[in-house]
Image: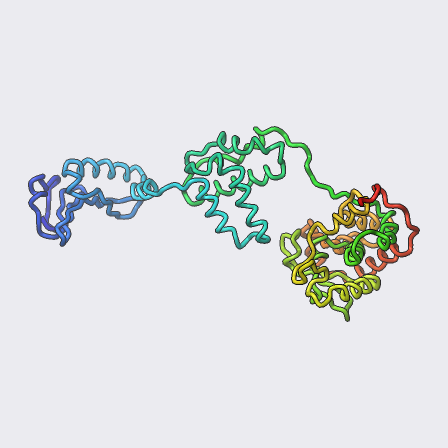
Amino acid sequence: MPKGSPHPVNALTAVGVRNLKAPGRYCDGNGLYLVVDPSGAKRWILRTIVQGRRTDIGLGSARLVSLAEAREQAVALRKHARSGGDPVAERRKARRITPTFAEAATAVHSERAPTFRNSKHAAQWLQTLKTYVFPVIGDRSLDRIESADVLKALSPIWLAKPETARRVKQRVETVFDWAKAHGFVSGDNPAANLSEILPRQADTKRHFAAMPYQHVPGFVAGLAGANISEATRLGLELLILTALRTNEIRLGQWTEVDWLAETWTIPPERQLKKKKPTPHTVPLSPRCIEVLRQLETLAGGSIFMFPGKRRDRPISDMTFLIALRRMGLDITAHGFRSSFRDWASEESNHRNEVIEKSLAHEISNKVEAAYRRGDLLTKRRALMCDWADYIRGCPTLEPIGSKPAMS
């Protein structure tokens, strides 16, 4: 009978349900209703209180669910709701398809894309998972993956490729944290505590091979006779004089140089070692200006200080390392930053914060960093001029680590 009429419990009958044609809502009692749509379709709903709110819960089509089955469902759902459960939310969750690890990792990668430092880092984030994890658990739904499965993916590379393995583990943890936040999984993260189970890795902290600062003047003096190009010779000298990183040198553009102020400003996008990249202004010593003027002539109108074979692109990131090998030296270009740091600490009277600022290092102490917001440009200029004078004015010693030059 239509909604609104008084009904005792179990007012409907199976025959009555089959014969009802008029659209409306018919009460059976205890919140169970048969709804007849204008189209003639019939369906069951239960009206009850779920966690303090009146809620309608669908029980299915009357063509598929009998009156007796609807009553049985209604009793069970009312009882569950009275005990504090939420049948609606639980049904919604049950209908939700849990993604595979590969699908989840791809979704996480897409969401995090704006936060990656550069496109290379973004590509590596997903590629490492594709290489080492997808073959093991990529096609498995997240709720079926356990710690043993993640362990199986990490074990082959944990000691063989420790740095990569740690990054992969962290990325797997991130995927499961995302899955938990989206309600796909619950419980502990299966990748969280594996470091306690996996064998202890050796100390893999990377140190760049550096030349002792006492031998740097001799190295710079010997560049003139080295079997490398003029641009590479000048590039190595500029790298040493400025204490910049290799990529900051080779990707340098002429628009970054202020000839009047005698400064070179590295833009934020190339400050890859900083958590919050900011421009780094480098004071240029007189010798740096001389080197840059010579490079400007060699660049032949290119926007880059060090153009490659194609003038619209910079030189390779291996250029300086290959030059050092040709000179018979088993060191890295990056290591000259350590040479500068050691010289500044042992041979100069400049304050530590000036030295660190010259290397574009961040101050780890937040309180100290808050009080040192200036760029110390004048003090850094004095430091870099002293460094240039040391390089040009000291006795030349044969570089340590030298060996017969490559032909």
